[in-house]
Length: 508
Ligand code: HEM
Image (cartoon, rainbow, N blue to C red; front, side, top):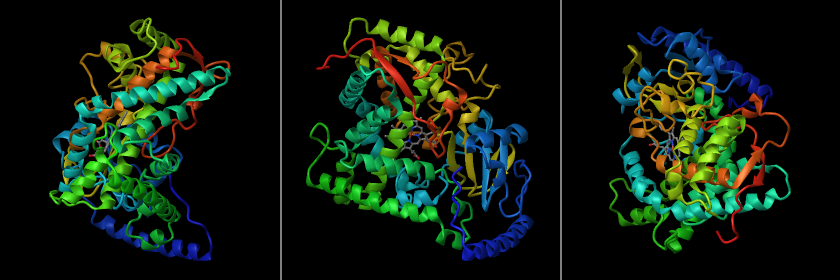
């Protein structure tokens, strides 16, 4: 859990001591005016509330443990911040459907404020008219089904580079860092589709974005004690974020300037940055936008579009390596469908039913965003309990995907479960025990783009290569450990040895 420690010296100790007393008095006062009919809670400590229940484990795992003990709707006091954890499909439906838009805000965090330009992007933005306008522009200009289809040649081009680079490295017989390769593939597609070319400073952008994702988890000490200003003044993370923001600004300013001097879309037309610049100048927008707003959206697209898809592909390969039965079955499907071909086309992938089930099963076990981050905009009722206004609502998508009440043998990677399920289940936001893309008004607008960025490379990896672990034996549970942060990927890179099976020609 990303709780940052501030450096210790005499002043710090004095500050911590005096604020402890201040918070103790505040906690006593707020206890007196506590809400009626709140959901059940575990034991609480003065000042820190329930924070100690989250220490030592990743948030989605710690919250699953609490829900098993206290129920599907649990109330927590995280420092000063009221929070509710949702862990059943019925309660998730109430939050995301019945109460939507009552729970459609996002919780605020220092990372969101600094790196996403005062929350003027889409993902961290509050639920308001500005958000609606920006989300609509991004869907129409970038993420619609038609647009996603039109980017097929970019995906094809980048997937072929990925395969060629793996093919040339495979001759050494050494392991390749598949996590890195897939990440480069996905970030190149996002950059080319959204910004018209691979950004010159992409490596710096990637580094920043990785740190941002780790820090945007929202469990920073300063985020949990918003009224305690000295903590904000001395927050080490805040200074780190401000330094990152200065670097980010320089890169994004350059990107915007380049777009102002010429249109950069892949077809010589407009990309999303060109569109936003044009709209900024037209004066026709209901909510006029600044260059900072454009930069917020650019960073959003890069962050939201890259990590989610690449970590899904990497988790899929990890699960396949652990489950030889499924690996053989999916490779057989892919190879049968492509018999005699030297290259994999997107239209070929359409008919690969088992491959699609593999992706579905991967998203059940490894939703890239395990806790949907929402915040109540008004007092609402969930599971018969009251959720006060401005409560952080965390929907534990990860734990619902592994709940034995909904899934047989939930820890087993078994794509066939979706064929044998009593009802057809999909991830488009209607089956609330399986919502890797979220649901309701804030459902992921990049669903089609994301899936396309997972299915094609996966089909290619399985068609062109056989895969081995770089050591004898099988992958252990610790090999599947998860990283910290708002988006959860593998903690360690996936290292695998590829052997060429169906070679790719130099020209394809
Ligand atoms: C496998 C791929 C992906 C997964 C699993 C995923 C998952 C999610 C989830 C769970 C949310 C929060 C939804 C909610 O609160 O209900 C979200 C939001 C979002 N996603 Fe994705 N995503 C993926 C790919 C993408 C891509 C490729 C893009 C764009 C290039 C994208 C852009 C966004 C944006 C802008 C939001 C914020 C929406 C809002 O707050 O209104 N995502 N995504």
